[in-house]
Length: 337
Image (cartoon, rainbow, N blue to C red):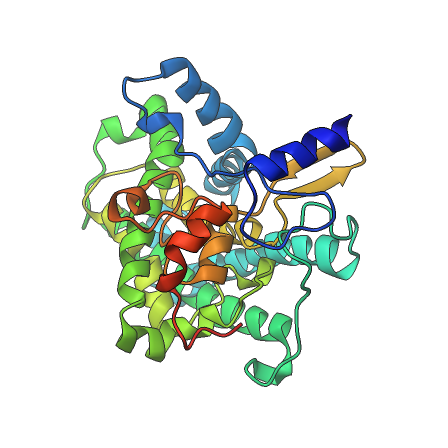
């Protein structure tokens, strides 16, 4: 009976991609109830807890609190730009990238612990001349750790220094627990996704695409290490998300949560698997079908579902074959397939 139900769903809302066996991602992709009108407060709270916080944003919040409490250099030391405390942040950031992206890669691609269950398509990382060392994984690791780790650390360190040195003031209300919680979760996500849409749209301008963004788009079938595998110029733009906190005063936990969301955050969403099975009957959300479709269809879904700007601009691909047919003219001829 369960198999028949899946088959009926697949026929009524056919997925535009290549599904594996009987697995079909649920489509059409919906806008979160946060943006519903008239408002749907109960649905919004459920979405906030069950879809936004759980599991990744909640995990990043916990890690941010732990780092702030025990691992962040003191305000006194960060008041002066010195290599010592910046190196501490750099090493920590590299460790976090390796833990999240490397852990997912080990589980899903090296051990193939769930084979192709919940996988968006049947492809595995490839060897090709278009990647460094002819290896998609090694190429992605290089750009993530070397360039991504550098720019994440640079922006985060400068932001901590701006507060610690007094260049940016931090009023007492910025440490209010309710404000910190909302800013470190919903605030970070809304700002990051809006910023991502804007910089991503800019990077699809043909000159910038050819100079920088095409490096990321070589990953037609992305994996965990593809998340922030980008050209240094793209990293410079991407991590400029930190600059908002030079204008809007926030607690260090918010700065750390922003880094978590921008740094290791894209690893699960680029994992290529809609869910990751941790134990036999327990799996957690991972891959982002919305962004997966961007890698496949190219000139659609520039942002994220949380901030549905693509719905307004007419570039929203909801994952159905009908929408795929409607938007197929937005693919570029130079897209690597």
